[in-house]
Structure formats: structure tokens, C-alpha cells
Amino acid sequence: MTDRPRDFVGYGGNPPNAQWPGGARLALNFVLNFEEGSEPNQLDGDGYTEVGHTESPASPVPLDRRDLAAESMFEYGSRVGFWRIHRMFQTRDMPYTVFACAMAIERNPPAAQAIREAGLDVCCHGWRWIEHFKLTEAEEREHIRRAVVSLEQTLGKKPDGWYCRYGPSENTRRLVVEHGGFLYDSDAYNDDLPYWTTVLGQDHLVVPYGLANNDGQMTRGRIGTGGQFFEFLKDAFDILYEEGETSPKLMNVGLHMRIVGQPARAAGLKRFLDYVQSKPDVWIAPRVEIARHWMKLHPAPLVAQGSSGGNRK
Image (cartoon, rainbow, N blue to C red):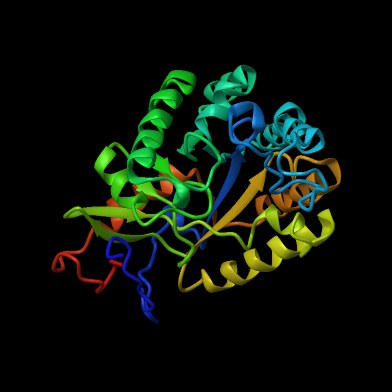
């Protein structure tokens, strides 16, 4: 219970000046969650078919039967959605980060090749798209190890960051630090800026993610159209861009291949990409570059180990 103490203060009313490159008012990171093929499935011995973030989250198929419809919705993301989204970013010469589930990448060699050739930033999204809080400590340690080995083999390098499926266990961050080799983790939703924490006596960087500016809103019934998705993202961007005149922040945009990879939803993403490209003083950056920037310009503060003061949570 003590591995993840809560902090309700953070930076308070005095966040540090991020000093983004070029004096940017906002750092913007797009994340593409590559999960298709790693989700729970009867063929992989899980005993049920995952229906999360599909067109039929309330599937009528009994849990003890294969849900072939849900399976095919995941396949759409891998077969079609990835390529539609990837082309959108490539034609605009815009970087994005892949939250990569290792098993999913293994099962799609053409996509793995495209990720390698584009030199995309990769953050490990676990060995599989499963709920880590259900794993034992030993199981979770093995999943982290196996994921890193797999991604190094399929993508040619180890991942720089870590983010598991909502939500992490109380052991996750400690096990990530124990494993070593990660610059940061994103298993947090509690800030608009990166921050430092202490794990196993070491300084550890957290680059928070977000579920608000996320296409998952469209499978939960909160946003219904691509146009509404654009408006939601635009509103968030405009507020942060305005604040950035004096207090620059980080904006996360979370995408899923089987969700925004659908044409009508992709139209909203396309509008947003064009909108942000029309704005000056925006740093559209891979997640690893945001982490490196923070490490360089905002190194871990010299406070007592375990303290939550200053730039540390």
C-alpha cells in the first residue's frame, strides 16, 4: 500500500515553466495504442473474448463462447485502422508515439516494419492488453521482462517508456524501475506536466497520460461523431494554448486503431491534425523527447528521499 502514496498537491499554483523547445506554448503528444492481437481471447487461453473499446461493448455472446464479432472488430484496427492513421501522420510529417503491446506487434510484421522504418517512438504497453492489477507480483515481473525482450526483437530496440492497460497494480512502478532501462512511465493521469518521484531509492520520471482527450470517449457513448471528437480536442487545445502564454503545459491525445481508425471518426482526427499544424509555437513531440527534455531542463530536485515537495510527487 506504500508503493504509490497519494499526493493531492503536486505543483500547486506554481508549476515550473516547462521551457519547451523554441519557446513553444504547448507540447502535444499523440499516442496510438497498438493493442489488437494482444487482448484477452479464448484462443490465447483466457477463457473469454475482450469486447472493450469495440462497437459492441455490451455483447450478447456468453462469456464462455468465442465472440467472433468482437474478434473481427479488433482485427479491423490491425488490418485497416493502423494504416489509415499512420498515413495521416506520415503525410503531414508529424511524429507520434506507439503504445505497443508486445504480442500485438509480433502478430503484425508489416506494421512492425512500418514502425521501424518511420523511426517512431515506442512506449511499452505491456506484454498483452490485460489488467495488470489482476497479476501476481511474479506474473507481472515476467510480463514486463517478456514485453521488453519481444519489442527489442520486433522493433529493433528496447522501449523507452512504460504504460500498462488501465490500471497498474500497486507493484507496477516498482517492478518497472526494478527491471531498469525505462526513462519514464505514464501510469498516471494526475497532471499536465511531467514530474519526479522516488522509487527504490531512485529518481523516477512520470510523464502523465490522459483518458479525457482520448477516442475511447466514443465507445463509451460520451462522444458520438468525428466532429464532436474534433471539437472536444480543439477545446482542450485552445485552453492549454491560452494558458501556455505564461504557463506551458503538455497535452496528450490518445488514439486506438479500432476506434478512430474507422473512417467517420478518422475525419475528426484529420481536422484536428490540420488545426494544430496551423498554430505557431506548438511542439508536436514524441513522448521520449518530452521525457528527455524534462530530464535535461528539470532534473530531479535535491529534496529528502521520499519527500513530495517541489517538483516531486
